[in-house]
Image (cartoon, rainbow, N blue to C red):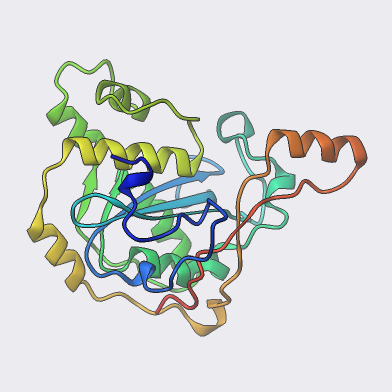
Length: 250
């Protein structure tokens, strides 16, 4: 379902094929599959270090993919888990610099994620730091969904649930990889819930304070090879620039 033919009239922001039309992030009906990598396990004490959003339409087809590293303004945390090093986030935006764009990607959509309450808690904490309240929206936890629709699964981790649903393997603990996998798990297990889509579209969303609406470019991960070359010649590793072409988010 998530192959090239699943895209609905748009270009993936990670493909390098062109800019994403601004209207995509403002679509009023659909799902936003989210995943964050963080500097630790506490949303109150730790920070987001990578964020991904995969937008699905009402029929659970991919509309767009958005991913960026985030400067946590401190230590990056467990590199042995998420693979992100301090050098990777030097060119990355702070959360406040992309907050408006993130709101635009989530607005009007049902929130989806694997243990989605955890991802939402980190997002809510980051928005709270800039004085913005994240509204209550309909949400779907793919972990609970898999527990219902895949009896006898070996565990409730994203890897176990995805494997039981036949989702192809990917690199774990990368925000975009995990969001894609959760989205495909959702698409394979969930039936359409028109009522949830309607409720999500009716939610009133806040505006990001103008001081935070800076529309910074989104920065993807540097490859391991780029890191190795940078270490050899003493330069900064080159990260890919991933811009969702959304300004302000309001």
